[in-house]
Amino acid sequence: QGWIADYAALTRAECRKIWARAGADMAAGRPPGGAVWCAASLLLGRSVQTLAGLPRGTSPTEDHWRLKNDRAALCVVPDVTRASWHDPRNNSFLLHPPEALARALARRIGDAPESAERMARGWLLSGAGLKAKGRAPRLSRLTRALPDALMARGEDIAIAGLLSGWSAKRQPQIYYASFPLRRIEAVWRAACMDWMGPDARADLRPLRARTTRTGSFFGPADNQVSAFFATLTEKAEASRAISLAAHLPDRLAAVTNFAGALLNFVWARRPHLDALEP
Image (cartoon, rainbow, N blue to C red):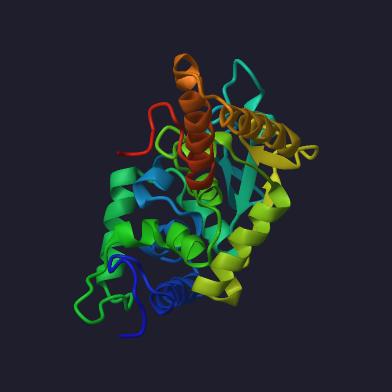
């Protein structure tokens, strides 16, 4: 046994084989729609149905396709941005696939989601090379290939969520995390080239030139976090001097607040709606 992991996850070798087959089809000209959508799912971390169902245009409030010079790019609008508080366009970024895939996608935008999924499944079953040791081709494995690759490299789960279009409601780390776009681009590019091959080199650009970060607008600054824990530590230390029974609840509260905050910080859990299990 060469590796220990979730059996449903694609291996690096499987990802590279599927990507190479799709690349060969695209290099031959007028590639089948299934090859295009499967390659896009691998690279962008979203299901074929989701990608095919995204609108084309300039919507400032949801993910969408943008076409320019016969090339398609995915505009990512993190759902942590609320239009009533901030302009989502200041928090959005564009994922530019490699040249061949970008051109092929531009011709497929407009496919019905059900049709795109049917083409992708048919292409996989036609001999994409995924079937090995009893593992049948499944589109769901392509969908999770990017986040699996990022997790295998030890990347931040919030970055995987931002790149893969996860909802902040289901992944609370996204709601509080903010990252420089340079870091997200480097992480995405490295994971794709590592798991799919050197020709999977892609680019990430801000939607607006002045944008340098993406993610949450609510993440506290480092000095604020330090000050918060310094206050909790001071109160916990002061509580050790409490001996009167009437003030023991204050001592318990101080220690509990410190321990709870520390655990939630280390394990990225929210005390509200996502508290630690007993």
